[in-house]
Length: 567
Ligand code: ADP
Ligand code: MG
Image 1: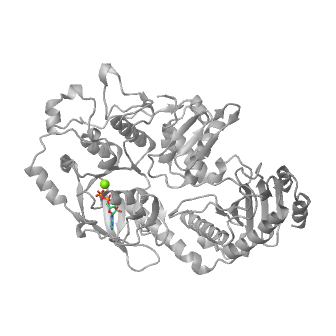
Image 2: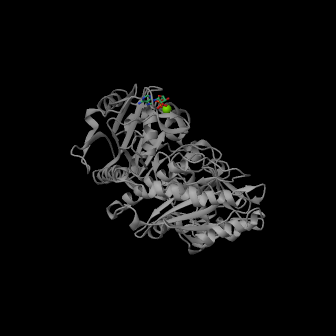
Image 3: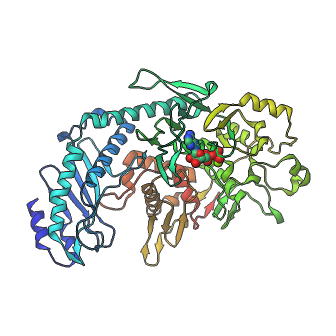
């Protein structure tokens, strides 16, 4: 510790590069400090620092980390506490650029496995970013001393050593309950669950926090109510169960349909206490599918949904730089079948209508032979039968869908009603007049094998693979656009996707003729077996990463304009 202090003092007022001398590992009374990477100048990305605390000196008991959900929750609580304590200090010390910034990659409303805090058997590692202070480009050693000898020790003292039983037990218990609900849904044939009392609407379109005033709490229709036993409380949790199969959410405009669907989209992740969606749980394989015109598509066999195009263009290996609404949505569906989805979440608002349905009049006017599209209404059942993929679909205007629904939920002034029987009745009394066009089966999906040259992070003489915010990954010469991925919920997931692509490239994963599905399996196994940080090329501090789902990783690969495949 004192060598560190001396080193710092000896570089005071020197050029910024002198900071390189403090890279290394130092013992403090309460922890070990590892300065893994020193930034090149005060304006560059802040330096990477780890604080390693001996677990035995804390009250973090083995039972708080004896299952994976518990360990992730425990790490999440610690990351939030460190973030909270850091904010008690002035945001930055005096100086230029990022001088004095001390940050942790803090979680939002969701609990996602992340590298910010890692609780292992022996140690608790806290990963920080520190803007090493400078005046212009001269080292401000005194300011740095304050950060390392006062701020960080005090933050660790309060956030980690100051952890009390009651700070963590409720969070771990919530994790157990959420996990129990997930397992129950899986074992009993449900796709999703929305607890009574849940608050679904958000503060605003850009906020993930609950709507504070005037939110109508969710209340299940009696016929759809289930009770799920959970640990740590005597009473089971009651709410609406959405079964596997085909479920419609109907209702008038502005009555809360999309809000319910969005809650289901986000329910693939766990939420923190007080969010309102703590007990909104969706099968982790559920994927939002939407139109995304302009996206690129590479060698996707969209023939189950879109057959031969004008001038005899086959669609078994469909590629385009600029997809239309319907082709983009069809491609996303097939890609997500390929990636192993368990359910599709679809909103009429964000869909290509002509992919969803062709009504009787259009069938009469435009012969099937001159319409490449087989609408989803004729394929949803086969998709469930052949691939086990359920559908939850929001419809406001497309009544033909009543014919194929297993369940129909009507939203009325934010209150759900079960209108399945009524819908069946109407479907009988008022036939749509449509002819079904879907054939006997959904159709075979050709699995693609990405070719090695698909991944090329080279940009000029340098390698470039970096996230820019949540929705753009710069990969070599190209930008991968992820704006349409509504289930990408954390900037650190985007960083992890960029890191995963680079890892696959550098380790030659595409050289083995593996299918997309096999590559996704392999990456998940890598994360499970070796930790999320294992894909980082940094030494020590892995960077700010949060675990994405395989579907968002697949979506990024699919949107890479350099992707080339064989089948
Ligand atoms: P729809 O898709 O049926 O047209 P939305 O789901 O977009 O309707 O909801 C319309 C508005 O109502 C949104 O501003 C949303 O935040 C709000 N809202 C949704 N559900 C609730 C609720 N349970 N309580 C209060 N406001 C809600
Ligand atoms: Mg809507």
